[in-house]
Amino acid sequence: MSDGEGLTRDQAYLLKLARARMPYGRHEGMLLVDLPEPYVVWMARQGFPKGELGRMLAIVHEIKVNGLEYLFEKIK
Image (spheres, rainbow, N blue to C red):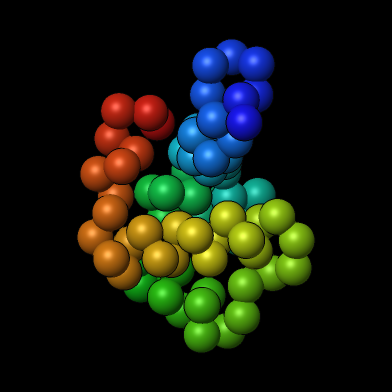
């Protein structure tokens, strides 16, 4: 399925994730994909917030612990 701009739904979400910023705390304003890995791991242990931010942080956690940050190098 396409979002109308030639991107699949997954590609569009990946682009949205690459542009999402941390809305609060010490790292407020930082791109989620640029958050320090220890911070994201700590958040995973504490429990991610509810809603879309939590889902995005969970994806960022998986990306970071699996060394997949390169996926965002060209789209940030």
